[in-house]
Length: 405
Image 1 (spheres, rainbow, N blue to C red):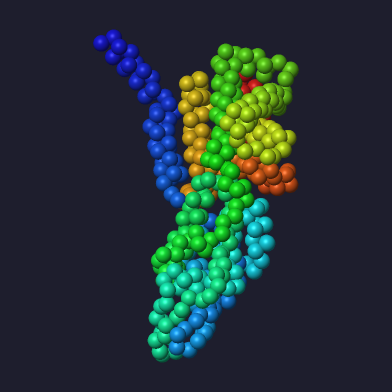
Image 2: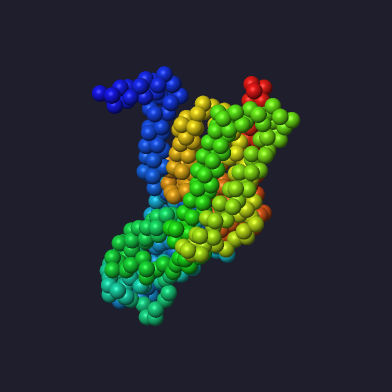
C-alpha cells in the first residue's frame, strides 16, 4: 500500500505538469507515426537517363522471301514497360553526359541502347527458339535464326553508393526486360542483354552508407543532451545565474558554450571516424578537413537548439523529454537509415526541414564520393544559416535569463 501511495504521488505530480503530461501522451505517437511514414514506403521518382540509339529495325532471314527487314522498336517498348512511378525517365542523346550525371549524383542510372538493339535481340531470341512463323505483309512466313552472333547488350551505369536504392533500380530494369522478353522469347534472361557497370564497383555496403548518418545522429544525440543537461544543471544550481550577473555579456556566454561543446563534438567525431575506419573499415575517400568543417558548423546550430530547449525545461527530467521530441524526427526522417526517396511525397518536405538531413547529405558526399568543398556549398549554406539563426536565438535566450537573474 505504501508503494501505491508513492505511485499515486508520482501520478499526481505528473498530472499537475502539463508539459510532462503532453510529452508522455504524444511522444509515443510521434515515434510510431514517424516510423510508419519513414519506413513503410519504397523509393520513388528515381532519375534514370535513357540514351536510345536503337533504330527499331531487325533484319531476319526467311524461308519464303529471303532476308526481310521488320520494324520492332524494342528499345521503345522497354522504356514504355518501365514503372514510371518508381523511375523518373530523362532522355538524352549522349551517354558520356549521362554517365557523368550519375557519377556526380544527379541521376541514379544511365541506360544506353545500341543502334542495332532490336535486330540483335530478335535474332538472339530466334537462335534460342529456332525458326518461328510470323505474319508479314498479309502472309505467313517462316523466319530463321541469322548467322553470326551479334551482341545485343544494353549498357547500364549505376550509382551503387546507396545499397537501399540499387536493388530497386535493378529490380525495375529486370522487370521491364522480362516483360519485353516475354514477347520475344521467355528463355532469354535480362542478364543476356544488360551489361552492368557501377560507380563504386559494388564496394559500398549498407554499413558504409549508414555510417555518415549514424555519425551525424550520434553527434546530434550527444551534443544536444550534453548541452541541455549542462545548462539546466547550471541554472538549477545557480551557477548560470552567477555567470550572467558577472561582467560577461549574454552573447559571450552563449558563444562560450557553443565553442566548448563544438570542440567536444569535433573530438567525438574524430573518435567515431577513426573507430569506424580502422575497426569496421568503412569506405572513406574524402578530405577530413571538410568533415571537420561540416561537423563544426552543424554542432554550432545544435548548441542553439539545446540552449532554447534548456529555457523550456524546468529540470533535467523535462530536458530529457524535450530532447526525445527533437531526436525522434531526426533519426526517422533525415535519411540516416532509409533513403528519403522511399518516403511518401507529402512527408519529404518535412524531412528537408531537418538540419540533420543536410549534415547527412554533406557527410555522405565527402566520405563516400570524395566531394570537394565546392560540391557541398548548398548543404553547408543551409547548415551555416541554421547555425546563425540558432546563435541569434540562443543569445536572446541568454539575455532573458540574465534579466530574470
